[in-house]
Image 1 (cartoon, one colour):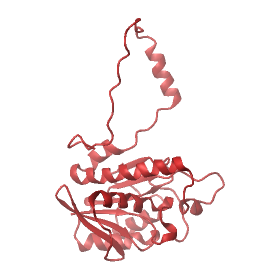
Image 2 (cartoon, helix red, strand yellow):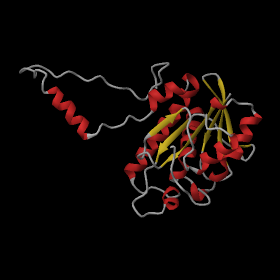
Image 3 (tube, one colour):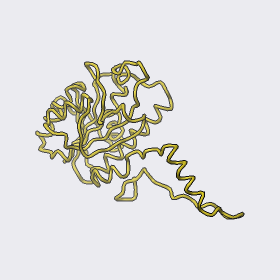
Image 4 (cartoon, one colour):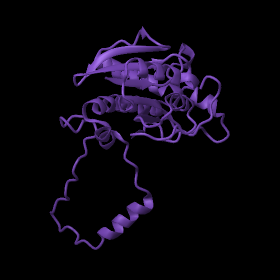
Length: 243
């Protein structure tokens, strides 16, 4: 059995804020799987489904972010789910908007929801998906930033795409394991301009193409499918009372 947890704050006033990226990604996954996350259990809303034949629980803690660990720990122990089958999805201000970073384990940083989970479980040895929401503008209040909504249409599109990718990554995680999900769905780092310049300089030593020759077509990278079927910080933020 697998436990997939999306972190966020309950209540309409927090819906679709940056800090509720975990909830939003889980809702996308639930729609893909035709599952309703509405059953109340141990201070959380859960939905039951099967992914690749594996029973999977989709979980939204209802304790507010700071106490997420209470709900996660209770469910993990009640269903006797091994820690390696726990996957937590949450927001990360240290990643650009729309970027995804999957890790097998690691510290909680100062993300209050992850801190609570690590404290209650007594371990940080479980997989997680971090969804970038971008850092606040200089001088802006951090709590107001993560608890706020984006008014930028381009940022919203990036986030919507990230939620879709995170949902696919969850399915890949259950079907193929965390390593496959990391290989397929971690956002690739952009090369620095200096590195690109070096590559161009190195290419100068290669004979140029003659007239009428067609340039080689670069191999395409399909980042939307999982390895099995050919298909598809830890956070460092100090937050307010409900963050």
